[in-house]
Length: 301
Image (cartoon, rainbow, N blue to C red):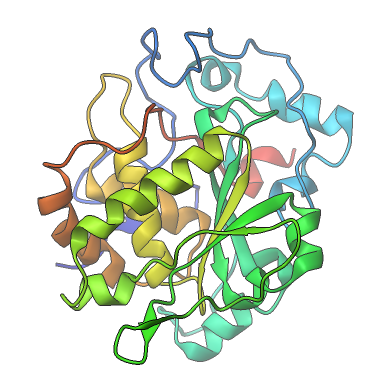
């Protein structure tokens, strides 16, 4: 089955599914996507803090005035969707190429701004809530970039070596940073590691986010192994306005819009995994809507 497709306008579709943005969503019911029963953020409230160094949204929110502009953008969305919104990836493949290969993935990750991608903020409440990032091993070792983006927790998806005995952390221990247990994505996908290992990993990441710590989930290129975990996390964490699980197509399209180099096989990885994970207790204490995605053209006037 081919992976879903995405459109350049900032919307992702697959098999007639709704686009991967929050436009067109039903109004948020009480208790969904809010923290401790809080009402959704009213229009005109400036998000705080300002977006950070490697987050492309800083282009549009580098001053309080720019933040104010975005915070009042299409207020119907602000009232019904988690804040903050995210910005669609604007990377263009070379002319004549339709898919990523090693050279284009290296080019994509060649700048710090694309070495890691923010994809979700816990509850979308802004200040005091952690943001989840997916990215590369190189970014995970870039302490300056991590600190500039307020990332204090890392989780390697590089798996194990030496016959499954030695975890591949991929990073050196650093003061002020927490490294969660290595997640063995490839071992799970190869059938060598129990799929149930997803549950404690999702729980650990979610608790860090809800306690206000931003988390980077990484592999070599941030294209498959870390993406597999991210899709599993979003599948557990996010619910529609009516409380239903988002479709695989919707979640894959959402992540593809934010980080365009993700591999198409991750869609099939998620389909395979959710057939089992879907019957397990949810490791996330709270659920929320997917954030909306904006494209450059919709923000730049």
